[in-house]
Image 1: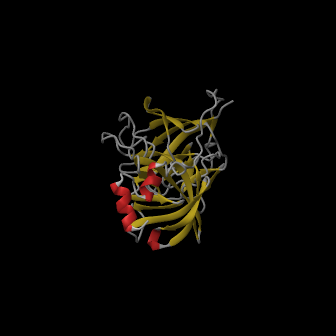
Image 2: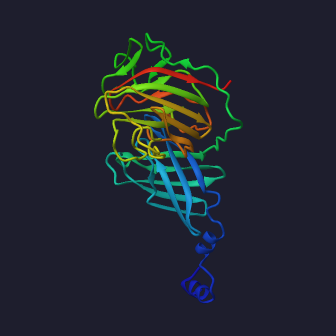
Image 3: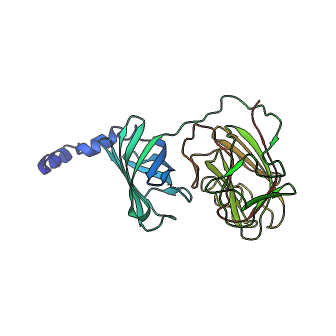
Length: 314
C-alpha cells in the first residue's frame, strides 16, 4: 500500500492492511503453549513458549530456556505465518538476548534461534498437549525407588552416578556438585514420597517426569516465591512457608495427574491441584505427552534422601 493509500484509508476510518490482519484474529493459530526442541552440534535441548494476547491486536509471551526459570518475552511479532521473538538473557553465556525466528505450518513451527554465545541453531516447536486427567486416580501400593543398598534402577544424566551419589544405611546422598540422577523407569501419573535433608545454603530439586522441577532449597523463613522450597520452579509459589531449617529431616509428598500437581511439605499442603504450564529449566526433554523418569538434581548442591517411594494408578 502506497503512503497515499494509507493516508486515504486512515481518513476513511479504515486501518492499514497490517492492522486489519491483526484485528481479524491474526494470531489465533499461534496462541497457546509450544514445546520447543533446539538442535546443537552436541545434541538437542528442550525449551518452551507460551503466546497470549496482550491486547486485541498485540501479543505477549513467556519462555523457558535450557536452564533457569520462566521469563517474559521482550518482543514478539507474527505476520503472514512468520514468527519472531526476543527473550532477555538469564543464565545464557555471551549474549544480550535470545532471538528466535520461524515459520508456522499447521501445529508446527520451524526456524532458527540465536542463543548462547550468539550461536545460530535450528529449532522446532509443536503444540503442547493438554494432559487432562480422564478420571480420578486410584493408587496402588507405594514401591521403593531406592533399595537401601545401591544405585540399582538409577543412572547418571551425564557421566557415571557413582561415586558422587552413594547409598549407605538406606540414605541416598550427594555431598556436593554432582551429576543429576535419573530413574531407568518412567512414569505418567504418580504419588511420590521423599524424606530429605539439606545442609545450610544448599539447593537441589526433584524433577517430575524429568520435566517439572519441585524446588528443594534452604529457604525456611524467607518470603514465598516460585523459586523457593516446594515451589514448581518459576511457575507456582508455595501458598505457605512449611519448610524446616537446614539440617532437619523434612517430608515431601507430590501427586502429579496430567498437569495438575499437589505438593505437601512437612504435612502442610502448599500447592493444591494447580496446573503446571510447561517444562522448567533443566528438563530432560520437552515431550510432555510421554511418561518420564524421576530426576534428582545433583549439579547444584548436597542433599540426603531416604524412604523415596512412588505409587502409580491401579
